[in-house]
Amino acid sequence: MMTAGDVIESYVRDVAGYLPRKKRNDVAFELRALLQDELAAKAAAQGRAPDKEMAMDLLSGFGRPAEAAARYQPRSPLIDPADNHNFLIWAIVGSLVFSAVDPQNRLASLQWVGGVFLWFAVVAWLRRRRASERLHWRPTRGLYPEAASRPLVLLPGLATLVFPFAMYLAPQTWWRIATFGTGKSSGLALTDAFLHSWQRGVTLAGLALVVAIYAAAAAQGGWRTWSRHALIAANLLVGGMLVVHAAPMLTLLGRQTFTIFQSQVANDVAMPIFGLVGGLMELASLYDAYKEWARVSPAPALHGAGSA
Amino acid sequence: MANRDTNSKDSREIGLVELRRGVLVLAVLSRLRQRQYGYSLRQALAEGGMPIEEGTLYPLLRRLEGQGLLLSEWDTGTSPPRRYYRLSPEGERAFAELADAWRAQAEVINGFLKEESDR
Image (cartoon, rainbow over all chains, first blue to last red; front, side, top):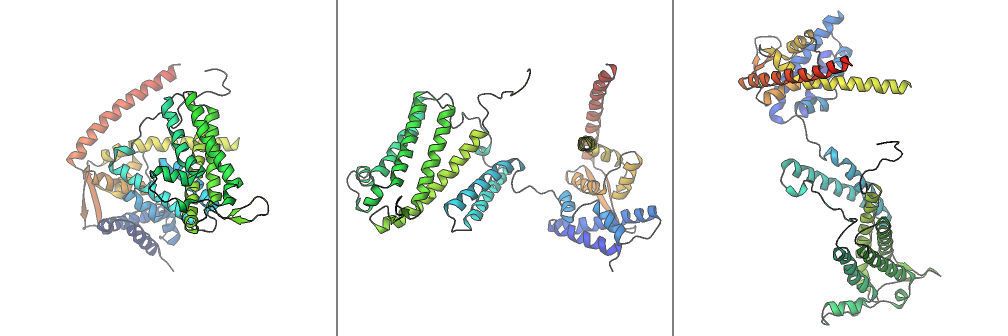
């Protein structure tokens, strides 16, 4: 049968366990004395001897031992509370994407969440130490500004045209040109089945769409709602198709399997890369979609307000 | 309707807690010109009209000591032994500054409240 003293001893011991070693004894000694004072006063007020229930009632005012210890020794949160929103978005969307991309690997989602947690924890730690000015907020024009320099908007489109569009279209030719005719391109030879596959057609169409959207945005001197939405959709399409490339290819009719490259080594190397790049593209596009949904443009507006 | 009343009551209680939290340090410093141990300080504050939860007050004393505003010493002549706190010279200065700031704030708020009651 526990006495009131046993309850207090147990509580003090548990609180002390959460404190830094050099503080433990001193705080525990004082806390025990204070709790004994409080208990004696409570017992006197109630006109009876202290018992276990009375001690438990007293301690409920202090909270769990971990909470009491945190008041003596405040701890910094592992992730800044202000970052909870972003952390949840990256963790949830990322784990959903990894579950879809690699359903066989059941640990992939957990590994992703762990990685995101570690990233945010390191950022929080660096911010507290003020080690990096780069982590401070800085004004930006946003990824897709409504008014932007035409060459700057066109540049990513041209880059997409060179890589990956041109490489995907004719990998051997692309490699020969990129290496000024010195590189061996035989390993990049495509199979006939892949050359005439719907997967290749849809991927090329998606990449061409991405290039066309950048060109249109450049022509308009900046991004509009339609071009932002179209780019997100096109990137989702291309990312999804790359993920499809990471699995054994199937013909539309007959569901027969075929490979992308004639070389088995090239297939073995390329397929995981397709999956990774496709997964990252899906993740980034979903994040862009979220940013688009949360976008306030060009200035906050009152909807349904009768008067300003 | 009942839910709205409960929320409104909760908001008022949160407001009162915030208000008291803001002046807690000043109240504690004001009672520590004479040495006190934790429980006696809590009693003194309660008798003065400011009851404070024990779980809040005792860690606060440690933090104020850590900030150099309080000095403490164990008195082992009592049973149980007690840790007594009192203002340090730095605590005396901090108390004077906080008291001035409090009076200035009180004057401002009183002005606001007077404007409201005159309407």
